[in-house]
Image (tube, rainbow, N blue to C red; front, side, top):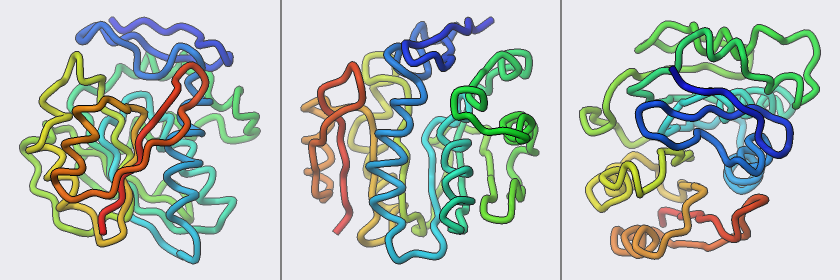
Length: 221
């Protein structure tokens, strides 16, 4: 069974029993998601947009989807969100996550649970501004159509899932993005960034979240 514990900003993260690593930074789960995926991803792409399509590599705890949904409602921005997760976390673990408390969202306690309980392989309307499609599949088996504005690349680290950070998978992400589309991730490993450049991405090394010096944003020309 996965283990739930508090990260340094008070928000919960989960230790994967299968991979032996955490789903979020021990320095702050919410802080990491806000900085990497919301600030440097969503906010960078939503300018002058009324609708976005987002692909998340690794639904995990649902934190990135949750925070994106809340921002979509604030911005009145329609978001179509597709999330891949081959190993869903158990519902009893979801019930131990404290994201809504840390985010100080009142009256929406069921929002994260509704995301986790949403039917797989179908587009489900979570709110007026956010629809979610979860795919319980290995990403290697999915044939994406070009059509995403933004990729949240939040797979486990290259140390435990190296195949997800190499040319074949990154090419798949490149092909799934529309021109000017963005990929953001917490990882700033040199070999990963070189692979992105080889594929054709314009790569930016940005300041990382607390506890991590750098992160990566890659733009498809």
